[in-house]
Image (cartoon, rainbow, N blue to C red; front, side, top):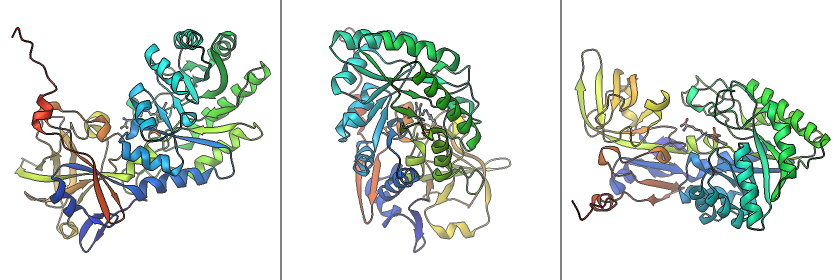
Length: 421
Ligand code: LLP
C-alpha cells in the first residue's frame, strides 16, 4: 500500500498535489512519501513483533539522507556496501551498532573506516577478504565481528541480473566450504565470529527459495555451534518482492515471510537480522515527468517525455515494468493507445514503457512512473550530460526538495581541462 492517490482528479502524494510540486520544482523529479516509507518499515517490523531483531534497511535501494533519516527515526538499522553508504548511514543518525557491511570487494581503507566506527558486523564474502579484515583489525587493535555470507546455490526465481544465491553468482562462500572457513576465521587474530549471513536475490515473489535457503542457514548455524563457534545472529538478507504490476505479481506479505523465518529460527535463540531494501522504498517513490512530444509510429504511438533511461534505468536494464499513471485522472477515461514511453537519450534502449496500453497522452501532460522509490534515483547517471533530477519528499501536507537539481555550471565544473591542452 502506498500514499499516491487521486484527489479532486489530480494525483497527490499524501496531501500534496503533484501538479503543485511539478510547478514548484520543474520536471522530471522523484517524489517520495514519508508515510509510505514509515508504514513499510512498520509492517516489516511488526511481522516479527516479540522476536529479537535488527532490521537493517539496505541503503543501496535509496540512499537519500532524508530517506535514511526517516527510517532511522522509525528505528531502522542499515545494511551498507561501501564507505560512502556507511558515511550516509552515520550522517543520517544511525548508530554504528545497527550497521552491517556487505559486499564482495571491501577495500582495506573501507575496513579501517568501518572498524573505527564500530559497526555491528561485517558480512564476509571470501577467504581473501577474511584474511585482509583480520590483518587490518589486528593492526588497528580492533575486533571485527563477522558473519560469513553463504551462497546456498538456490535459484530465487527472479531476473538473472538480480539473482545472488546461485552457484555461479559471485556472492558469498559455497555452502560446502562455509564450515571450514568459519574454522579458519575462529583462529584468526582480530576476528570474532558472531553469526551467519545469506542473501539469495532481489524481487523474490515465491516463498519456496527463501524457505530452502533459511533451512540451510539453520543447519549451518547448528553445525557451527557444535564446532564451538559463537552464533548470536542469523542474517536472512533482503529480497522480498513488491507488486510492480497491479494484481499480476503479488508478492508474499511480510507476515507470511515472517512465518518461514520464525520456523527456521525456532529454538535457535538467535537474533534475527534482515536487510530489506525494495520492500521498504519501492512503492514509496514515483518519478514524475512531462510529455514533450507525441509521434505516430507505424503501429504504435511514441510518447516522448523529459525523463529518460539515465533517470530510471530499470526498464532497460532488467526489462522492469513500472505502471504509468496520468497526473490528471480524467485522461484515464479516454480509450487507450498502444504506446512506447521514451526519453530524449540517444539510445534505442531509452524507454520507460514499451507497447503499453495507455491513455492518449498529449504534449504538456504530466505522468507518474510508479514504484520507482527503490533502485531509481540511486542508479541514475548524467549520461547525455543530463543533470541528475531532483528528489522531493512529501510528509502529509508539506513537501521539501531533498536533493536539488544541479545547475549546468555545477555539472560542467566537475571536469578539468589540463593546462597543456
Ligand atoms: N542485502 C544484500 C547483500 C543485497 O545485495 C541486497 C540487494 C539487499 C540486501 C537488498 O535487497 P532487496 O530487499 O532490495 O531486494 N538494482 C536492482 C536490484 C539489485 C539488488 C542488489 N542487492 C533492481 O533495480 O532490481
